[in-house]
Image (cartoon, rainbow, N blue to C red; front, side, top):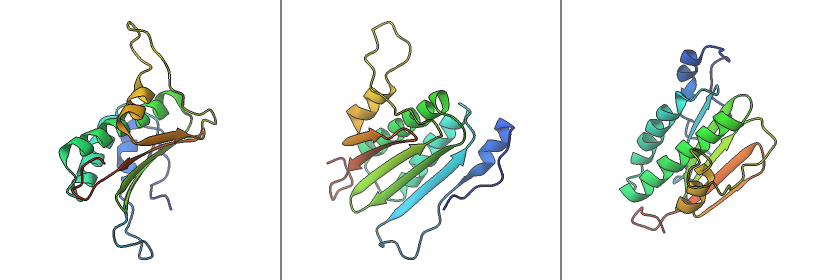
Length: 156
């Protein structure tokens, strides 16, 4: 269930659309999620990094994995804003030792791993996602990745 106010055309109003997902009573006790829906505007990326870090602190995750998740969220959100269409949605779930990140937009073309040259100023985002996450994929409108955790809360 998406939590958001009515769609706004002004980028400044998009910041008001971020809402944490309520804890669902039917979910396992160790499950929790953060969801945000926003209009495509690059100024939102910093807020999503901050929101992700705040959400992950609730689980006492160690710094290396939390920083990796924040970096990947930044890359996936930026990718959706630059290459996607329409509203962007971010969902982060922590369930049974796995952090799942999903970013959706309305572009049916999947995200692709590129091989940028040394002088290229962009094109490395999905390479970072591949390097930092345990697995990732893209179905077009959704690009996702997962991080497995050990019992101490660090990357497995």
